[in-house]
Length: 252
Ligand code: PGA
Image (cartoon, rainbow, N blue to C red; front, side):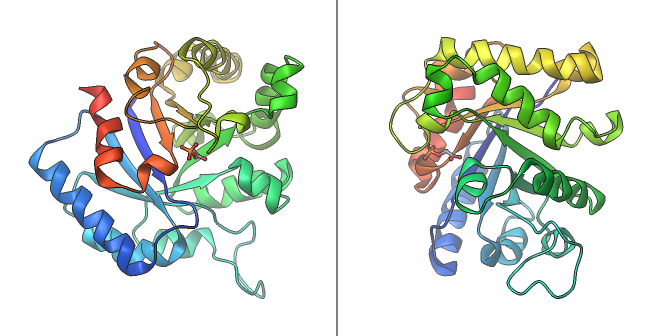
C-alpha cells in the first residue's frame, strides 16, 4: 500500500525562532492525537538541523526545499545534498515551479539534483505541473509527462521507491484557486499511468502522488477522497499549526 502524506512547504517564511515555535506546536498536537498519514515539514535550510533534532522523537519528518546540483566545492551560497542529509533531514523538495521559474532550474539541472539527493540517502518530493496557459491549451498531460521524463524517469526501479510526486498546477499555487477534485484526479490518474508505463503497474500503485495548490482544511477531504490523490503538498496553510492539522485530519 502506498503511503498517504501531508507535507508542508514553508517556502521563504519563518525565522529560526518562529520555525521552532511552529514545529514545537505541531509536535505537541500530533503527540496528543496521532495522525493517520505521514507528516512532513519542508523548511528553509536554516531550520533543518534544529528541527531534525527537535522532531527526532516525533511522527514528523523534516524536508529541505532545495539542494545544489553540484557535489561540493566552490559554489558560494549553495547547500549540497550531503549537507542536507547531515542535518538529519529525510526528504528534499525538488522541481517546485517557483524554483523552475525564478531560479531557472531546467529539467537537466533538476535531474542532477535528484541524482545527488538519492545518492546521499534523501527521499525526493518531485514537483510537476502546468501553467494556466498550458491548462487552457489542454497541455497539462504533455507538460507533466515531459517534466517526469526530463528529470526522474531515468531512475532505476530501486531508486524510484524513494520518489514522491507532487502535482501542483501553477495556476492554483497561492492563488486561492484549487483544481477541482475531478480535475486533480484526472491528472493524478494520468501521472500514475505514466509511472506504470516506465516502472510497471505495481510500482505505479505504490507511488505516492500528492496534490498541491491552495489545498486547505475545507477542500482536503474531497481531494484526498479521490483514488489517485494520496495527500497534499501544502504552502500557505502549513504556516499555522491549526490550519495544517485541519488538513492532516482529512485522513481521519
Ligand atoms: P499553496 O502552495 O498551498 O500556498 O498554494 C503550495 C505549494 O507551492 O507547494
